[in-house]
Image (cartoon, rainbow, N blue to C red; front, side):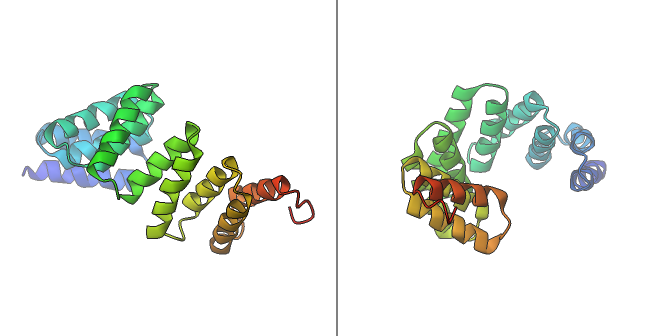
Length: 194
């Protein structure tokens, strides 16, 4: 491997860690130009473009990675989010479906599918996905709050309150957990406890 490509890659990593995704993408571009077949450099550039909100460039890099290797659910998930950001909902849905097909038990895949199900009104499906994620990572507060929200939609107020309570034990001032718990208690007409 070209030493200058390695150095450019390291520069890109350092710039990404420093919070400058556009500059990181530039450094990863140098690495890709020197080593065009280096998929990790191309994947990182896609991620940097994504963070810089250059979604078309991110999608192009994710396309290139997937053209060489169709086995990574994470790349499909990343491209799904980027596609949704540019309004390509059908492409985003197809990428999410492919990620689920490749890795049906992957926690990130389940969490993403749960979020999409919740967004599109399939609260029971979302709750089921979030439950599976929580089996593998019970203290993940955002997923616990997302399941509480899904439970609100299916009128499982006790479950929503319980999820919020679990989330607040981990992060006592988590704003969304507090708001969701208040909503659930109000739905239960427990105004004094809300």
